[in-house]
Length: 494
Image 1 (cartoon, rainbow, N blue to C red):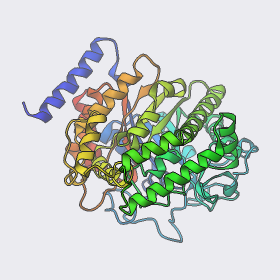
Image 2 (image 1 turned 120 degrees about the horizontal axis):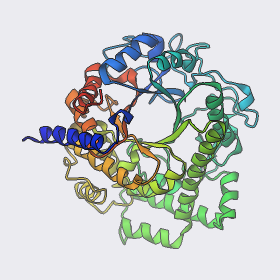
Image 3 (image 1 turned 30 degrees about the horizontal axis):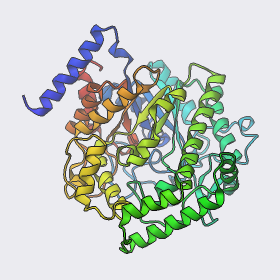
Image 4 (image 1 turned 180 degrees about the vertical axis):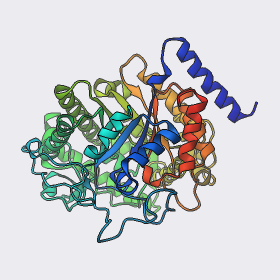
């Protein structure tokens, strides 16, 4: 029996056992992320027809707010257009421009306690994606989850008064969880969704990390940045740090020393005792570095908890959960911060990103980034092998081949199995995010129907409660979406 047939047979057997133990397969969540532009371009009924026909979708994750291109807008410029929807990119200006913001109406009564009050997306006039889609979805027995993310820009009125502050005192484009304007906006938004629409759930995502990990470039994307452009050091965060017993002056000294270390590392100026030892010396000298990282992480967790409790106070039946950033698959530091036993306290579900196809390219980028700082003494292939071991992956492709091969479906299986074990005994459901045509470089791996099928099978074989097809329908090719559908049919879920 070849490997693919083994995966298919094992996955089917898992679902059969579930049925025999009174765990109905009908409970599996089959979701897709979709933005307003797809419904505007193609029509609500044709899009829902496609979803149900191609992949037996039963849950819509509708992008309700973002200023980013990851979950809203048409295909990202420079990437091949998909085989559906308008065969054009968003214009740089004029009609059809991608601007971003809220794709639902703003109900002012929920935003009285924040200066962030004017954030309506102008892309489609007064179009409200929830009003347009929910009635048709409900007739079909499809659930609707509001999906919004932590992505802003400087065009929003008063946004500077909610932004994080860099170490050097300048404003970031990101917003601070400890700033009352942002905190109250988040609570107002989830209350608005919960009271104004007949929704089934809310999912929010924040693809950020604290100052320590950011200074070391412990993530997969982006060009080398200035290590003093790390966050957050605003008055609210410094006040909170003092309340926690953190010496703010020493924390700032430590991060300035860390910035000097990073700048020298990028220039190839190896410390006398090497990169790894020198970084540990900094951490021992300035324990405030890690204390500040946990201050940021705890602030995010408190934000999760506050949003969860706000929704439950309005309507307990609405599910609340979180998009967990792909960095969880690369960085041991970030993974350590994603303590699922903690997150279960205020999570009905977790969409944990397990993007196998673009994962190879992203892991290679992460290795290049940290290979210039904390692990500067380690040859990059050895560094990748080390990460495979500590993250409990089987030996995937080598560094040179990884971007063009992507991760295998075994990566999805291992990540889903690990998360499932961590969540066992709790109410929190696991919904792995499955990559379908997430943009990659021209020479990097591309999605295929078989690759999608194998990833979906692997997720269910590991015990997932559902799958979430990602990032957005407007960049997916239909044969690859049908690959997910083929897996679901094989498992008896279609």
